[in-house]
Amino acid sequence: MKKINLEEFKIKSPIQIKTQSSTYNLEASKNIIEDELNDVSKKLGKLQNTMYAHGKYSVLICLQGMDTSGKDSLVREVFKEFNVRGIQVHSFKVPTEVELNHDYLWRHYIVLPERGKFGVFNRTHYENVLVTRVHPKYILGENIPTVNSVEDINAAFWDKRFEQINNFEKHIADNGTIIFKFFLNLSKEEQKNRLLRRLEKQEKNWKFSPGDLKERRLWEKYQDCYEDAINRTSKEHAPWYNIPADDKPTARYIVAKIIYDTLSTYTDIQEPELDDDIKANIELYKQQLMSE
Image (cartoon, rainbow, N blue to C red):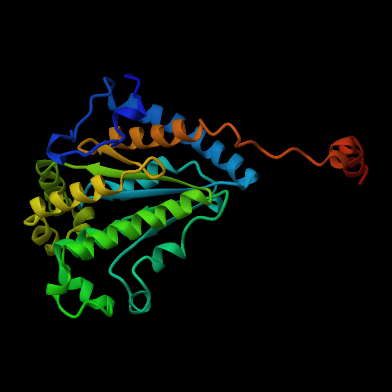
């Protein structure tokens, strides 16, 4: 199977989404890709246990993409070898009344992963500069003192919001959170095929909503907003990765490999040494247990 270099996918300079591929050839069969994914997933699970014991870093995985881009199944397959105590997944829907009574980052901040744990944001704080930018009237529900009408939501408003998001990520990165941001780059044609499968397969009907088709008609506007958000916020401490998402097994493998290869560069992540007194008396403790 083709070896990948995470730098191929990291966004280090301004991009145009239309020039970023939604496909990637790993030069391997589906079965081989899935076997390789299983191997990386097991390594990630073992590494997470070490990070839990180490207790110095947390990891935040941010997944963004158009409807049907495969976020849910990616979470299921990439993190299936994790101890449940070491990972939490949060899917951010329409803000609740309680959430709207706080600033827009509050609901994300309060569920950030603890040291030693992984947190997955399935849809993220970027919804606040994506969905709200396509539908600016949603901002009115936030009751911001300086915003009284859609006309108040101007370029300066979005500039400020991007600055706030960058500051938020810089703050948590400086305090030990390792951030990965993945844009699951799905082609419009493949989204059409996946929506059709939702309609054709009875067991997938529940996933379909007529709203999916309304949002699909805004495809180009969403692509523009994604492009702007990625270009403004891909930083060394919180990079974006373009993940070709037309083939789900390929996308899952690339994401898992990027996470594992990056975390493996943190040579200080080690299981803590036993206390000298405990280490010196291990045989004594074993004898006490055996003599019960």
